[in-house]
Image 1 (cartoon, rainbow, N blue to C red):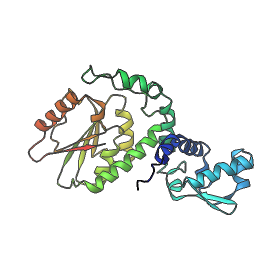
Image 2 (image 1 turned 45 degrees about the vertical axis):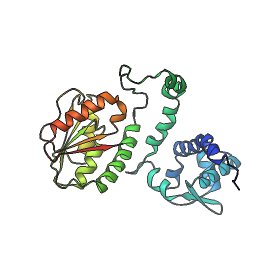
Image 3 (image 1 turned 135 degrees about the vertical axis):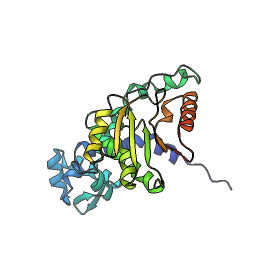
Image 4 (image 1 turned 135 degrees about the horizontal axis):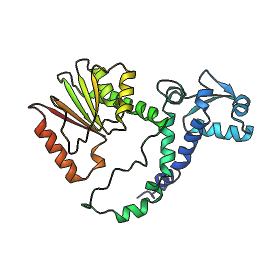
Length: 268
């Protein structure tokens, strides 16, 4: 007998925005920061955020149901992920990076998504890269920390111990190069980015005291010269920005540029 299908997965997709909104408001209310030192009572939390106790309890219980908080009687405390990533002022704070998704969801790219989907044609002239979703202000720090986590994950599975110089093309804040160089003490890197990103990446490299091993320079790696003397090239979250034809050309140039035994790493 065939079991009847269920709309559960569809309902989960349709209501996902509700769960996201709870997360975003928890960050904006700085609840994890409020609870960083340990459990606090419902009365205390409600008073701190200026909410009616009935509304506060319902919101906090929703956070519990989503695994963001833990309830002990009438007190609430941070769940492990909230304690690690949502306490403002800590090295691993990702709040600004996460609330960026709420901002971007209201951008033209998404409000006109259906129109753009119908009007796009393969092989058409390559459009300029959209900056609608680019990090801004405090979001840079959060995005950098998020990229550091990705870089650390990559460093754990990618053995670059035999490599000496990395070209990080479109390397953003330099987070991937930082993580890889911290993992491999003999590795040096050069980050190639747009003019406006050079001071941003340089500041993050300086913060980690890696200026002697990681350089940051302005350049157009799609058409300009590639860094010399590199035996490994990293393209992290780059290929999705360009057309198939442009990517084939870029990868071909990298292939010709790398020495025998060189490595191209695609991450994203």
